[in-house]
Image (cartoon, rainbow, N blue to C red):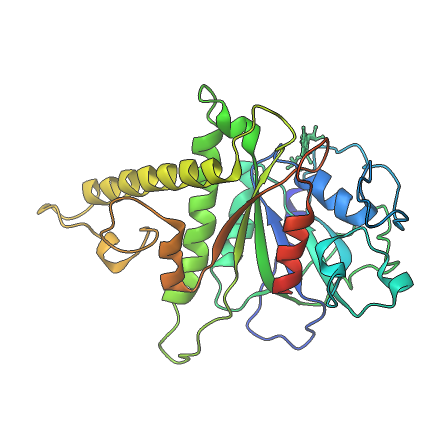
Length: 307
Ligand code: GDP
């Protein structure tokens, strides 16, 4: 199954550019499959009074442990107020819609490297080949298996309830993964120059704090500060690692060049705002896929504004 992961084939040329894509990434168990299914099929319980007759009412499918990425084609309305909900039947309302692909990636640590390697590529195209789910998307079409898609945004989904559990390694492992994702995006900007000085298109990141229906979950503001603190710790630890393996005189090899160092050089505490230096916008928004809570509308709106 692992070779199937090599779907993320980025390329400098984009002759077959098709629908833009949004990559869904994050630790396993965060709810990526559940979120993909929610957007694809609509909510298990709809509680939106403004939309008493949603087109999609089928239940959220039971999620399975996925080893392969899967892709669904979705459409977001460009006409307000429809942008705020994924429940609207865009065909019925006659709204103008922008289609995009949502690509779910496996969270297993061994399989992350492939996705990450391509994120740092200056071109932001992705080939979502063979990643289609067995269940057809509600738009009725599936992505072309050979077409290249422009990566528009990245959603890093975390389990906000797991992050609250200080006995678990959830915070440190989520932050390790996020560090690598942000570093890959930072490198895209750092690698420009040379022959082509055109800046690569920026890829904004949504840190989606999931499972806010659980009372044990950290609110989004705390997810943000905890992740920032942990990313700062990882940054310091990694720069020490660079120091140890560096020159005998203790020169910080690599870190001074920005290699391996996330965010603004020399900073003590890490803040997501530092990523703007590399044209990487990071926003943290809370929500939930199942249960009662803020739902997923804010995330949907975020996507709509960036497609
Ligand atoms: P993935 O590994 O990231 O694809 O995670 P899954 O989509 O398989 O979800 C892992 C588990 O979390 C499943 O049992 C989901 O039902 C559950 N889950 C997903 N989203 C939520 C949520 O918003 N709230 C709660 N309480 N559970 C959720």
